[in-house]
Length: 199
Image (cartoon, rainbow, N blue to C red; front, side, top):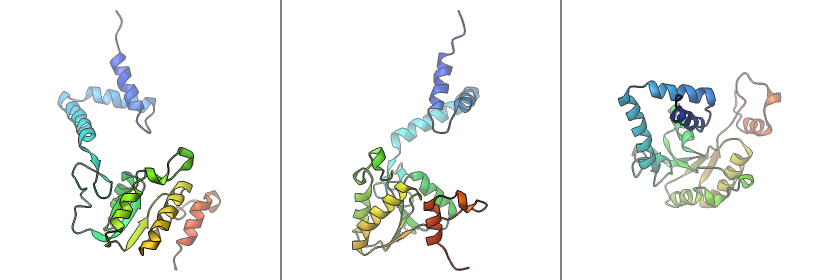
């Protein structure tokens, strides 16, 4: 009877399903997991199960949390008058790494994309309008990606917010240092021009 490797194959296949993980990376991860001490492997799997069971959307900003409100919404030192609108929770993490932004967030969980069948009703836009309706927000920063979908989403939300007397701003996207203008797409160039500042 030959050596049975079906469980190992299934483990590798599960890792391959993760975004950005190819066959070789999946094999390395699978063998790494198998070589972990039993207790560390159990901690790893328990953490995954806990995350799946307990992490949900914040009742206010739609970011991910295991509490009713995420730590940012729950922080009384954060500025209630500014909301940064982002596509997904990863964007919150990226902006928080800068340690410059002191306001709050709103996570849309997607972008308007008719080609993919995603319309405004499938995003968390109504919840954003509800927060604006409370009257404390003075500025909404649209921090969606500088793509066709990101621009369309920013413009759509901007049109909804303008009548409410809220200042709507857009992140300035520029040309990365070391790149050539000829390789930059039109949206990036347009944003770089609009976001120019005096030197």
